[in-house]
Length: 580
Image (cartoon, rainbow, N blue to C red):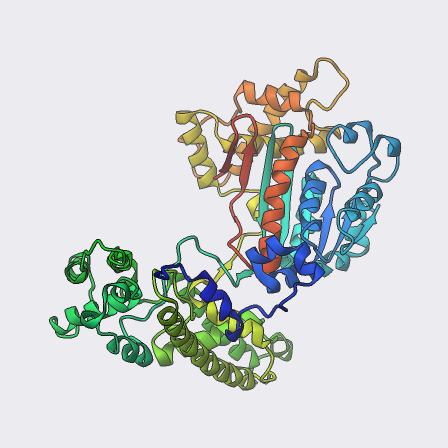
């Protein structure tokens, strides 16, 4: 029988020979069994990063504990819960990690004990300190964590906390919930994404300047002499290269650069298809070759995200050189600290690109209809080329390290290999500080108000009202509607005033605000927020906990691209939209 397959087995059988592949024993360890599904998602190295992470949760409310639950289950190394409050009856109605029998006990202690029960591999601790007190007494405590999550924290405390963490490059996730609504915001000065995992990555095949070993392999394949079975199981990569070569010979060696030229190559491939209908004549591989023309024959160019990293590395090196100059003040020369690993690697990548005119080869192939022997042969050709690029990259990295007085092995070999494999999709994520994010640009505010005037209430209005609630709390010591008074809607008038004041403050630097829309929130939104009374609805908390933990794991592992926009979840309309 013919061996048409997608070569998943081939990929697995050769994975250990690749520098960035897994090295797992034939019989999986208990930990590998326990975390099997997530290991398939972020790999052994991602799991190791999670197990080494230290997470601080400030605010053991429903959202905070749901978030932490989703990080304890995958095996986060350790967590600390900080909360000075006691368990109340209201907590028992929204937070699954407290119990009626423990009303009056420290909320941080109760939640930490119950969360520890979810995973014996995780170390859990708690603090009953007030955030504002500990920020004054021991600010260094907060900078020793991999990630800080602040849930339901007062705006004034957030400003102090975020400034501290932002200066020390500790990522912060902020969440606020009011009833059926919740917002989340990432604050990270610099976060390097090692593995972006794009949804539809383009194959790195180098057909514009093909590998010599690949050319030799393809030249040895005589399509005209093949029987129908071998013809219908020839890898589409070989087919594409052969007809691409034929087209280039007829066009003075030119590489297809536009749609019409790629269509011409596709027509050539179509002309070579036999179209037989016997047992071995279903030539799906030839149809794959025709489809691959669209993505495999794109002219190579440096990705914009990588080019930005080159610029950042060059700027850092220039600044460091200036600070290291003997004419600079001694305190400035001391400020020339060693660069982080990602900067060293990006500097080396820029040098590699300048010398080679391309990035390191990733060494992988897409799935394709093929017989196993030829697919494995092709895969090994690309892997050997990727290994050679890795060796050269490592040599250049040693030179870069020695030039600035660092050890030649400053960067772990596994990190170098991971960097080279994902070189085309690297990126640096940055956000403004929380202080800046919580005070939007006047132009942005004016635009949102105008759009609201035309299209009706938007996420921006809820965001504005959330901040107005903080002002309300600062003045009255409670949130709107959080009262035993049956006429809780009386708070709506004060909330409306705070909303107007806040909008005017945000618009203050504009020369004119006449073009902006109304600065008073719609009455139904004001009443809705007062009805919430800062209540925590568990279904909303659980949903947000899933989102926040997902973003937290992205930050810890350096995998996937985190969301940097301020987002608002509206459980009534079931929408999750950016505020701006």
